[in-house]
Length: 280
Image (cartoon, rainbow, N blue to C red):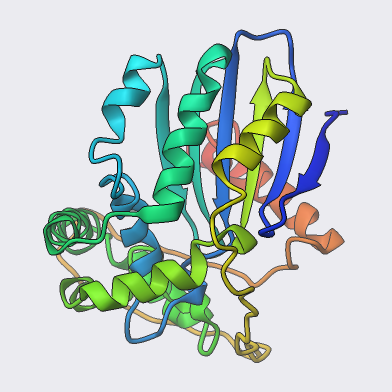
């Protein structure tokens, strides 16, 4: 069982600390409670666009990568329909560098037309390469639209349409940031060869003065129960025919979720799965 301590800053930032003296390393993980499902249906792809913008520097730190590399660290991020996650790994003795970098982009991310244009082009090229030009690339778009008719899970994190990213404006980006990327909407996890009391001091030093923001309460539409099969046939210039099937399943906090997750691995989880073995 993993042992950890929890505390909360006055601005609402929740902090989880796990001490692990068996490693010389430490990790700082910042999770924001915002994903693609929180987007305006006419302005999708913003959560993923922000994953890119957050590495574009802040008002005080124009180059995010160099000081981290000098501290022996590395970082990355990912976006889902439910959350956005940023993480930094580095030698534990240099953990304050991670606090400095992560807190500064939360406090004062650089919003410029230049940074937006650069990252918008990157995301648009990713959209075209993986989902428009690649064989079967649009299959998941079609499948989600079949599976969900009302809930925002109907679009992928890359966005519903390329035009939504192409037409993203600086004011749209700023509004999205100050609504979601606030201490009250974030969870900070620090683990490794560190001490909880030291981490508390660093949290108060680097994060406590950041304005908390307003707590975001979702009002997502409920997806009606599916009562009949939905089938879509698409003819396209691809190497081979393909079949995609999906089923609605239990929510993550329900017991049935783990049954469904286990079945997924047994049936299709890699070369040892039942479906793979039946084809070889």
